[in-house]
Image: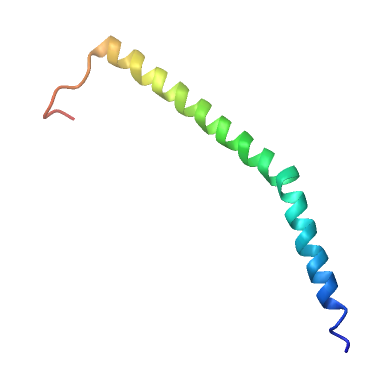
Length: 62
């Protein structure tokens, strides 16, 4: 009988986690994705400027 009160507590914890996930974790993940995309964009622009300066690598060369 002592463990019977744990069932509603577990259910409430699960529901609370489910309700708070989009409020807390989703914006953090979105920010990290946009920062990663921004970093990749900067890297791509750097690579493009280097290719313009030095020319694209030819086949068979590394």
